[in-house]
Amino acid sequence: MSLRIAIFDDNRNIRESITLLLSTVPSFEVVGAFSHVLDCVDDVRHCKPDIVLMDIEMPGMTGIEAVGAIRQELPHIQVLMQTVFEDDDRVFDSICAGASGYILKNHLNTKLVESITELQYGGSPMSPSIARKVLGKLQQIPQHVKPEEAPDYRLTVREKEVLACIVEGLSYKMIADRLTISYETVRSHVKKIYEKLHVASLTEAVAKAIHQRIV
Amino acid sequence: MSLRIAIFDDNRNIRESITLLLSTVPSFEVVGAFSHVLDCVDDVRHCKPDIVLMDIEMPGMTGIEAVGAIRQELPHIQVLMQTVFEDDDRVFDSICAGASGYILKNHLNTKLVESITELQYGGSPMSPSIARKVLGKLQQIPQHVKPEEAPDYRLTVREKEVLACIVEGLSYKMIADRLTISYETVRSHVKKIYEKLHVASLTEAVAKAIHQRIV
DNA sequence: GCAGCTATCACCCTATCCGGGGAGGCCCTG
DNA sequence: CAGGGCCTCCCCGGATAGGGTGATAGCTGC
Image (cartoon, rainbow over all chains, first blue to last red; front, side, top):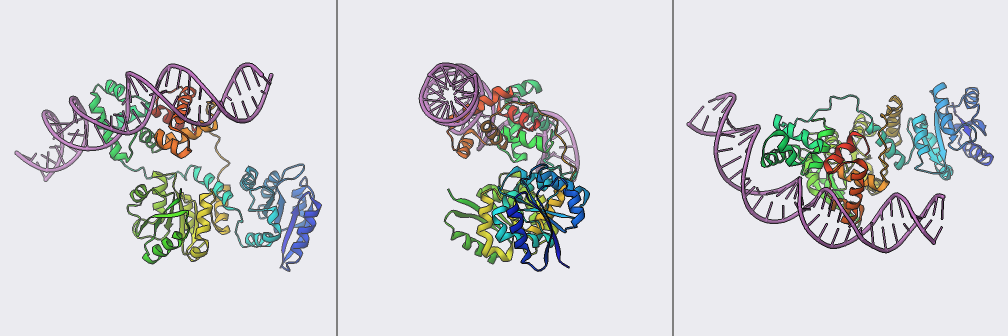
């Protein structure tokens, strides 16, 4: 059975040349080509493609919204975005909206068939720079509430008190004053804290303390 | 300035051949090669690489844990995973742990230099099938939690860069070096940051920056 | 009692930071 | 073109932090 492909692109020439290009592959079948995405969900529902090739820049509803709409209504359909510019936020947005991959327009001739095949076999073609953005996004989400093996730095109670003061932005003098100990004692504690946290400055200690929720 | 690379692989032959391969690239410099990851954080801290090449299968701590440890301690370091099998859950896990990309071992000869270069320029080399998994993960998370709007301190781009360096624990000198500006310029920026954040020390600035998610 | 840990304090010297100036160049806007 | 951000660089002097070393005292557990 052949792979059914639908095309959305407002440029007629591109629609036609893509159709022509894909028709050279026996296992591909172009089942629809549309110049706008206003009725994209209906269009897709009607021509039943396996894969949709979507221009990211489209009149009316943008390609990004179209991806969202299609994926919401027909989640089994894979969408491959095509765009002129790389590293655009729109590429990233469309991936978030549900696109399965993307391809640069001026790579259409050389990479389109390859990209579609990758899609077919469960891959997501994308450039390394977009991949990086995606990774960044993935890593910044609150990691599945893993108790986050709170690395135990074995700080003593006193050291935690001092650390808390440091995070407040107090100077050694002020800390000494607040804890009614001498300046030198504060220094001793700080030195120990540095050892235990493996840091070498107040700023590092503050960053670590906050990130690891020591304070 | 050359790109500093450290290698973690338990196979001596591989370590040596990678070193040999990378030494053919003038702009690369192998600054360390280690057979295990037990002391990886210290090793990395010591040899100060820009990029770490990490075998995913390692004795002792696994390469995945090692990535997590390195990224936690030294978040500015990029880690490129190398693995024998593709489409392995471990690849995905290591990406979640903070790896910036990965490469198949039997592509080392042909793709290693290319992959490292991609890393260097902010890309994340990975195969389409892994990319797909990453996308799936990204899309399944509930569309992101809106962080309660932080007060706008009207920091300029440059000031935010400096602030980010401060949070990393860098000294003025190191910041000057990284941003290739003079020490005094860094000071100027810091003064402005102090004004805008209404703080008077690095520690306060770090605490505020982290809490208000400015960086 | 002694070893081990914590908390306390001290001194010396250097590195780094902080505050308060001044100043030139660039680009944009009114 | 005048002013206003912004980025860049510089000087000075005082304040603060950091590294190294050492010391006393209390508390704990074997």
